[in-house]
Image (cartoon, rainbow, N blue to C red; front, side, top):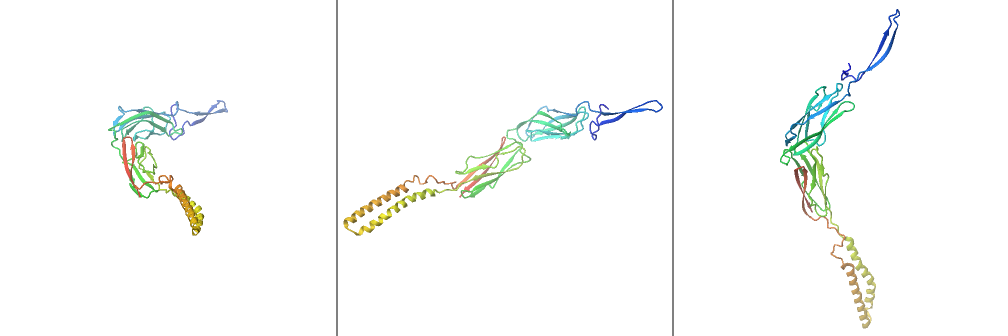
Length: 335
């Protein structure tokens, strides 16, 4: 029994307990017992091994499969199933047959791995085997490599980017929001997708994407593109200040004007003096008005904001995955 293990339904390394009995040949048949505990263990640690044989060539055209062959071999006491998987950076198609198997003693249990890609790219990845034992024993083959070749455009894979709506019309000061649906023609994206927009955002506006990258392995994804316009701001405060100066000057001069007008009925000489005084007051008032409102620069007052100008603007949103690129145009009319 030294090379045997308990069957799969029996806990491994079950202890055996028994007694050693010694009985005499005397007439009373005197006997004594000695209890013994014995546990049978395997000659090595319960484990399994993973071996992978790469194909003769790990390079193939786009959408053409390449097959790796492998074996799982277990020790005499390893009864647990083992699950196979591809690590990160693996091709879009990475399929085991079978994906879960029981390693056998001796030559091992065979399996195959089929890989292919929809795009022209080189993949360096690992093949991982995880056991179902309580310790989740893990082994890996870290040097798997596969290159998918083609015309550089990634034939066999395509995706679309669709705006909804594609046209917006609104007054300045309101945001225009475009819903963009980015979807592969089938399955998921084999690589990351980068999103960007053209640099012709309308003047005095801001533009933003809700996401600038879609992760590898994602399916159809919803993204928003927002153009935030600004409303015109009139420099009213400066204009009010400009009107205060002449009004103030007029208020100061009003009592004097009243006195002058009251004295116009007296002698000729006095009337001449009063008319001269009135002329001086009027000239001073004109100078005050010029100082208060005549020196206004270009008329904008320096504090106004014209906002986003009325007109029609077209921008382009681009989605790029490797050498595959799709675009969508959105149009905004500012009233």
